[in-house]
Image (cartoon, rainbow, N blue to C red; front, side, top):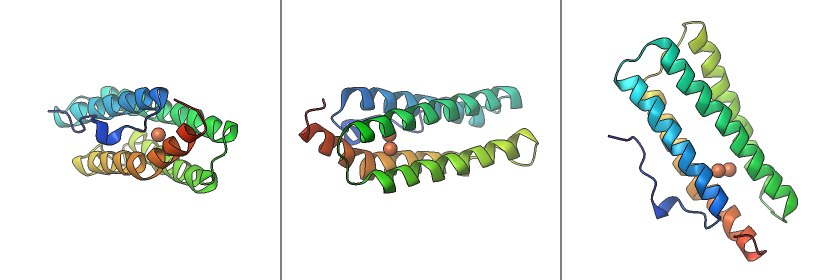
Length: 135
Ligand SMILES: [Fe+2]
Ligand SMILES: [Fe+2]
């Protein structure tokens, strides 16, 4: 069973942003599956790396839009992104040296962070950019 199911609750109204969020949901679900089915470290590490790479790409996309459009929340939004990247990259370093495992708690943190960030921060950004003509 997937950890996260994308629904219109998570829609920002911006098509490309929604498509990227769906991809993030898929990558979190893949990592979750690797965790609960007890896949080996290489497979879990690969899923983790894919999730982090795509997250960094996605944040870059949103931040480029914030530069292109007028978005009052830019500084706070960027800070949320960079804090999250710092946390997950820190975890990845620990994981790579064998000092941390992908656990159900980590998966719940990732799920809660992503859904919370989309619903509280990305949706407001999407609304402001839609008012300026982005769809
Ligand atoms: Fe986002
Ligand atoms: Fe964001």
